[in-house]
Length: 554
Picture 1: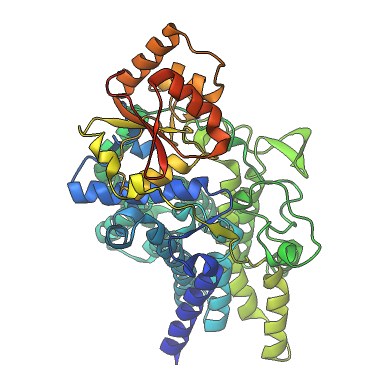
Picture 2 (picture 1 turned 180 degrees about the vertical axis):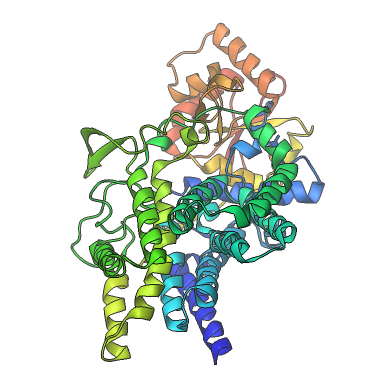
């Protein structure tokens, strides 16, 4: 009976994840969410991981972006912990299909991992554990990223890491336990380091509240885990913080993402309550609304925590979740997106190493990690007259905050010039690069999509990535490479072009080792095409793109 319940639980999570991604799965790899910049970037990293694995190349430096310098892979969200296992799917079906499959696996896997932990170690009731799995696997901090960031959707290792740490209290096999924990930590580091950092912080706080300072039984295992992890991660981490393209401090706009004061009781933009009712959407990007749980769920959790306050486990979970929820308010408190002039709880931490690259809103993940076991404990403790009434109450609390299917549009076709490999006839040397107009960034994602479609073989002169300001290793993080003269010209095309302009543009082509410049035949970029004609002579329309062969100009 228990095994049947387990199978049904996992199957329901898979079906739920498939329903949430249904519009994507209806045409695998052929649809995109609105604002798809980060989705395209994730597809590129899947293609790059598969390419690196196939060629046994150096995965720490992506030399196909930002020619000639390349990109520091460890300092970006390359998610090799997912990209390498997904490589067979990427090789066979492409990174678009790989992304869709990975998203379903990440969502259902995260929910299933919470269910496993809760059903084996927290509650005796399988239905209660199932509800906890729903809360842990489909909360805004997980499902909100489903269309964009698989590295943040894939939180299936978090409950496993928590289990292994807590299990050390009753184990004497500290070497084995430490090595297992190290393997989990290393894997999580190559999925998303930020999640690993928040997990470590949240576990530390929880254990202090639950066990006090009685940590002696787990210290040997933690020491083994730290030592073994360091052996594996020492060089990658050195490269991340001191290698080519390393930076100090996160990108300034992203590190301002935080939870609004009214966000906790608000519903996320993708929730049932907002999508199908008159509830106003909460401020901010939907993928970063980690702690936007809605007032029914917040009231239910608060009420249960107050009722069971003497239970050390419930109290420790509630306080840990509340603390990290408060930290997610960021460096300055806001109400409905407007600053109120009061420093936030995160302000004292914001300039510390590691914390200076952390997005405050993502500390709200820990609130979800506390919510999952609290939800399971609450359902297990419910003493209502009937199961139907219990199920109805649980649905009334959870459904309004539940995520809704991703809104999508049909992906623009990749031009034949790219898909047929015609570009290879121009970029014949391995270090030849291609300059795509417009330059890639979050909003202009065409170049990254084309590059991903080549299996990350096409070498871009620019790229959408995080690197140091001015291209100088160790400076603050910015998006993209430092702009050069030709970049500036293409952003604001002048009416006339001088001989000096042509000379400086040629110098940029030589620096980038650019073989061709290509641009989509989009009327919005007619001025850029006119500029390229004036600089390098008339372009040719080949395979759906405008092409300028600039090898003789560099």
